[in-house]
Length: 239
Image (cartoon, rainbow, N blue to C red; front, top):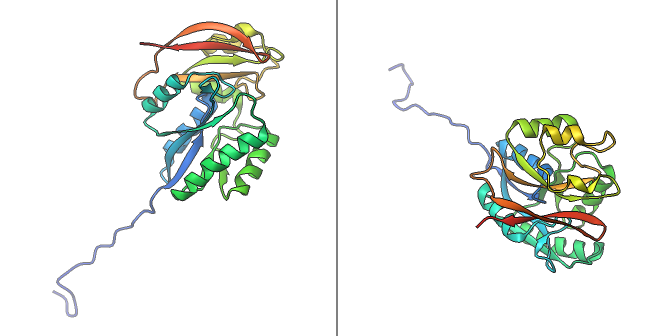
């Protein structure tokens, strides 16, 4: 042994900081699913919950119209806890913001201050979210913001995700698109003025299978009805 040496070697190991918890604003549709996938790829964050607004009068996902039971099966297949925020069918901004504020407070009590959204390019929507989050000491993250929507939806299909169109705004898209599964034929049939991800509210979706799912969420297509000027295709949970 060299003079002044030690019989013991000190081994230094780098300790990685624990992953930061984050919750995902979850509609059950493709954009929030894409945001979730991006977060799950990131080594420095941990998705602690999916946060979904539910209309209590219908017991369905607000705006999308998907039944609570299918939402719960979806979250279970994704392996992420589900946090429901209930509002009434006629809820305005005040009721929505109060309900979300209560959810944010519960998350802050758990040491969570970050919320991720699947927004793609609507600046006014993002600005509204930022104002609401700031009021409650929360910060927003936008994992798929600014990505090319035509490329994004084709990557979504190529990755093996499967999603059904559950709501259509007839002012922007023909109601016949409700109840269709998004594939290359669906994209080919879309009018050129419709965003392929439906970012302008042309349509809303429910993702039922894909690479981040443990198993498919099984259902059958029910009737398509018009409610509050939108066309909804009901999804019936499989037995």
